[in-house]
Length: 229
Image (cartoon, rainbow, N blue to C red; front, side):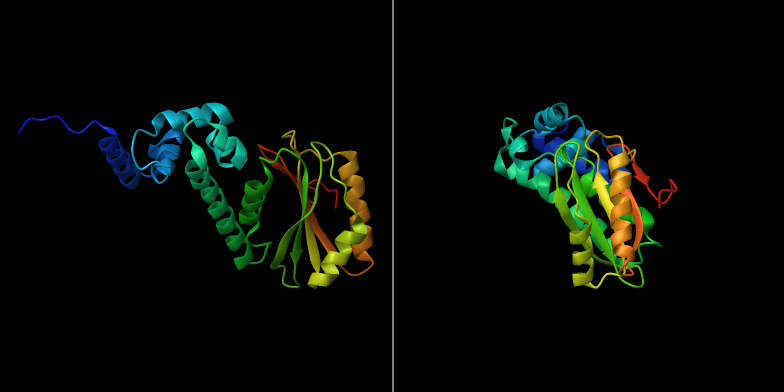
């Protein structure tokens, strides 16, 4: 019958959202609408908007949802294992893409990509994590490994273990990376002292410390930029 209104049900809404995304790009969508589209894969029927908005309310932002622990995602009503898996696989894909881009070129020439990768890995962690980025003689990334996992304000780091692992991988240089769950990336006196100890231990064996990066939720600090290395 002619003159019928357009489909305003869930299927019609999904199609319009997809078309808007493809025609106008991601900037045309609000954060909850991005989540709606992600949840299409897990929730093949029904309206995903209420769930998307509930997730934003629960975790504060799109980034908060993507970085939320799986068990916490599953506690949100109507999320289930399929919804949680869909959200977490997107986070994993983003981390792998950032890691691959950081590997493709020397760290020095792809510094912004490296920082993006570090933020994806660490900015939403609830406790301190200490990572080591191992570089070869051409400053290409050999490996990224978590060396220690600590508490909300402390991570025990042992210079001897750091140097030992660098030798095992044949690394010529290191970048130290850890996060401050408080959100403030300002180096503490303990951070400064620990970095000096690692630099001294590594220097005896010809291993350079390129930088120590501290990741916070809203930014980062670089020991080299601050004149601390």
